[in-house]
Length: 170
Image (tube, rainbow, N blue to C red; front, side, top):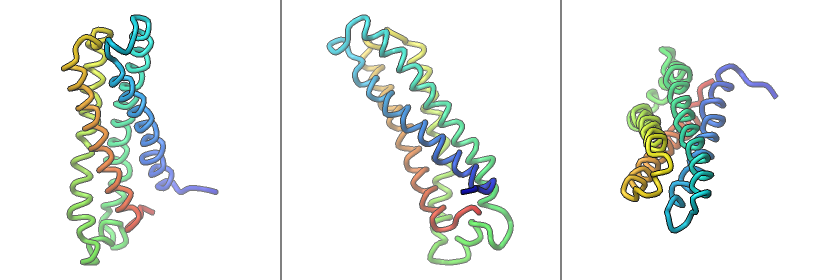
């Protein structure tokens, strides 16, 4: 099995960085949710915070890697000014034009919110450190921002997968 350069970059953009993002999100959310004084001991807080710092930082880095490779590597191939580019293919058919007009426009703007929010979460976790266990409102707000970062990435990823299914970048 071999991949073209475009297929390889698409794989890195969507599957490799996306998988790191998903794994970091799942672990980080579980650790944030469980970071309550009633659930963890002093030693447990130290262990959980170590994992949480790594997880939220990995999620932020993966989110930035995904939008950067998407915006400056994969997206230029999508919008090439040729009749056989994916964008041209979508716009040429009135039945698929909405995939670009709505789906791609939302995807390219909405996706940038994910790394911004993930970085905010990483900053909060690194700033508050072990004391985050005592700040319930901050912890809940952090979880909300974390879930929003994931939701925006999930919406952008779904649009990306569907658009690639209709008009692949080859």
